[in-house]
Length: 116
Length: 117
Image (cartoon, rainbow over all chains, first blue to last red; front, side):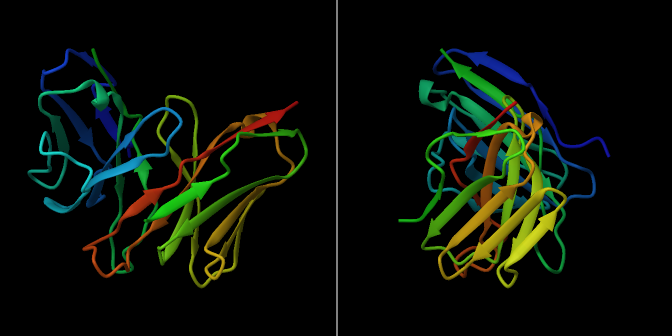
């Protein structure tokens, strides 16, 4: 169990560019979450996958954001035409789904995005 | 609107004292509530989970209470140590919210705790 890994850890980009973040969850976890966190705030829910199905997407997520989990393993979060307001830490978490449907979230160390 | 509120101010306490952090929510009926610890620049780390039908949960020096009538959870750290200094987050599991199709975890704003030696 190597934990949740995220790549890259840091990304600096110019406004208008596209960026993509990758998340590799814990291998036996079928649930994967993306959150965004800005300084002094708690993680803000973006989207959630169970296996390869994207089950929920925050209304706060604009059309510039898209997430995929093509084979139910790793996931990518793409932000198109970045804006300065997108600067934040993007956190990925995974959990074990089961009959009871609950479980603790295991977070990665995050991908910090700075949009200039 | 839906809100999850934690202590708005940072909490500073003396080593050895008990730290008490609050988590208040409105317009939710969570099945579970979780507490996480987050260190600067790191992802949150799970600490404790409490179900809606549990009043109290303990783990070593940590204690969590859950009052669904008051819509409040309290998180206690007894015999606090400088190493407990971090931000603590509560998260609501909206698993059984009818409109949602799976587990949803919504986080509070977090409370920054500093334990002074």
